[in-house]
Image (cartoon, rainbow, N blue to C red; front, side):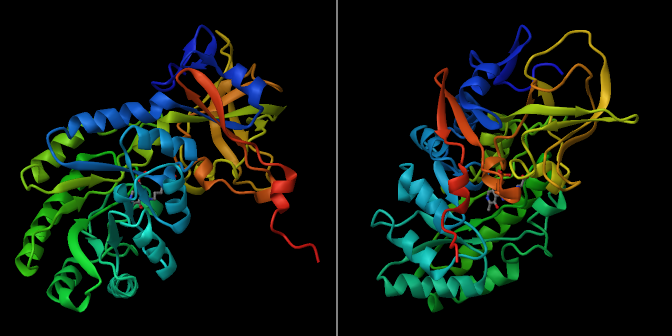
Length: 424
Ligand code: LLP
């Protein structure tokens, strides 16, 4: 239980972010709440930009990982574009001030309505659509033609590479629903004239999330570069961009992630000399370690084999441990030295055995009712995957910006829970 992440550190016995004690945040905003550090988002973005210096690039933040408006505008102002997967995310990105021309639309199931809105955003439309099937390409072509527009498109390539990650978040294997195989892409390129509403200008990939080794990336980059050459032989024009997706893993405690400079070196090695724009879609890398979930212990339930710490946050607030059995470090907000530890489960109040944040974790025995815990590395796929299950209002979000805590999402009320429902 040493210094948890770069941005959340103990000062004396108190866990702080940028000089703000988490006890203070809990007193002011209540628990549970998500707490983010602005530097947590900005430092990895700066490192990526530095690593890609010298090549034409656009870093599009994967909005799905953390879609709070203040987070999006923080990243927009720092020069990031946005990677979206729905009309709702488009709305958020534009509301946060992202220029449409720096937005990429990914995802296997865009509706014609979503396509039209994206084509008309800021008049010029978004930068590009990553298209995943022939049927989707045909629909996009028709939608664009009807609007008198031409959609810029990347064909999403499924390179059949094993990203060696959790099966639910591996996306680059043949049996996954994502992307087009080499043959399909070559067939589309040869038939490009049958899709007059689109202009095929790029190839995109995204082989999975929480990738910890360069090997699968190298393998897919090799395949993408070869495919780009083949496509360019068929099309009457050169490709303008390659979108290498997201997926870079972070440390949740023990992992040794790929270093940003090493990743950028690989990108430059493969695509640096091609005079094309390189697009990235990082989510977790920019948001994962920028946030924690702050929760209060409601009860200690003592058992012989293990104790349960029942906290006020639950699986509806952070579903990753229940859904993927993900490990999140859990640390006390106030440290006590030289105490004993005991095997402990940290669980929420929801009526499901799967409602846990940690199982069999060695945690201080002194932790008890009223103490605060920080569940670390919760900035990505935390609040954005939250639900109202068990009719629990979604929690507040707080951003420590330039050293000052700001409420960036109010805690939901009971009224919020029933908004839109009809009482017959
Ligand atoms: N681009 C595309 C097309 C994606 O599907 C994703 C994530 C990203 C970019 C961003 O990936 P990242 O850089 O964050 O790995 N809920 C899961 C992760 C699901 C990822 C879905 N796609 C989790 O909590 O681990």
